[in-house]
Image 1 (cartoon, one colour):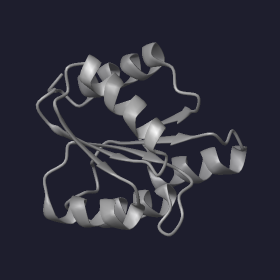
Image 2 (cartoon, one colour):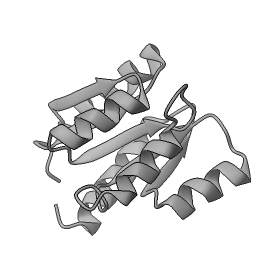
Image 3 (spheres, helix red, strand yellow):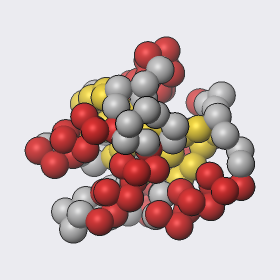
Length: 128
């Protein structure tokens, strides 16, 4: 697993962003950026090389789902691994994220072991 790539956390809840960052650092990732809005995250994605996005679904303005859709429309970002986090277990939210091309979907509260295992499996699948 390439822990040298940049991971972008898109989360408007500071405590949740810090938790995710801690999990990633525990896994060996050192290049982590945090954005508190979908719009700011999109600007980062269009100007820097990012290897993984972990985004909250529900955010004001450009939501995580809208951010996902914009990445899938962009030829340079189309295959970027994108993990969605949410407190919603509504079937519609899961379906919409899946149809938009989400790589993985996690419900909050986030637990370290399933999160770590899924990221490790993701990178094995993409050959990192």
